[in-house]
Length: 56
Ligand SMILES: [Zn+2]
Image 1 (cartoon, rainbow, N blue to C red):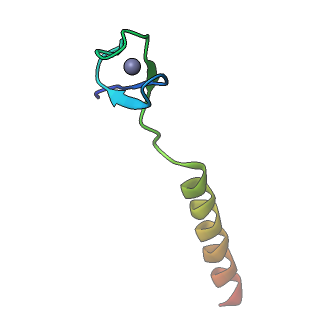
Image 2 (tube, rainbow, N blue to C red):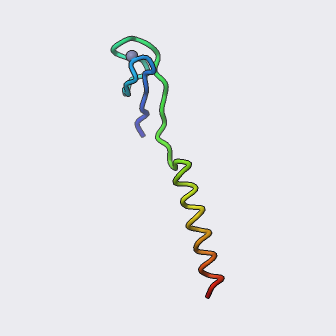
């Protein structure tokens, strides 16, 4: 998995752990498996499934 780095100075994403433009140290941005929104959506879907079961 490739890590993505972010330069807060240039507000640019890079693949290097230091910015090629300003030489500042970049922040590692690991790709999130689930965004909080997706997790909430999954929870809601599970809840809906349970509700459907109860109705039957
Ligand atoms: Zn930079």
